[in-house]
View (cartoon, helix red, strand yellow):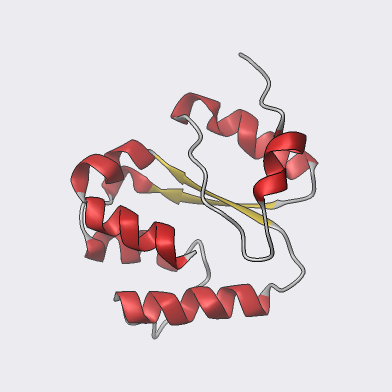
Amino acid sequence: MDRIDLGKELKWLSDRGSLRLVQQDSIDIAKRQCSDLGFSIISIDGSRIDSDEAFHRAVKEPLGFPDYYGMNWNAFNDSIGDFYELNRGKRFCIFIEHFDQIMSADLKTLCIFATSC
């Protein structure tokens, strides 16, 4: 497999991060490289995300959202903001595995997530 040069690729990470697509067969390499660069890794299984509700179920635990998380887009916006505030100064790479399945299942979910981060 080709090595992904995340030393160059990670330049896109700003204060609040960015969304980038990594092919499924390269995720393990990307995770290892992010980890080697000092990033904490958060993995979300996208294979069962076929609706907004499924998206909220999939992200709640990996992102450490509270038990009272409202499982809607307003709650997501609040909780992702809290996530950033609670982890200020920490560096994360969030991987949504099987992202292609989200894209084919519900483009609205994909678009809302991409603009929330």
